[in-house]
Length: 121
Image (cartoon, rainbow, N blue to C red):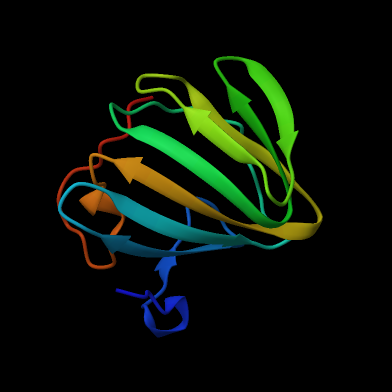
């Protein structure tokens, strides 16, 4: 099945200046994140029991995983182990577009979700 991201509803991002579009299968989920260059970041790290991968599509994003910061650029694949404390810290001057993949699935990221979050601070 081919996913047309343009046909999916948008959901607010984790910060002002970002947008999320999410899909969810039985065992995994995917989120497309678009972040504007002027998005506001609080640097507040979180964790969850899901494995997470981030695939950079455009722009750049500065990430922190367990206290180590680095930049991700188009084509980069980043792995977040379950339980790791992580966050996005900043985006480059052109903003960023990336995919986040989660296993097991993160239904809490679907538009209209009213259940609890899996995030731990």
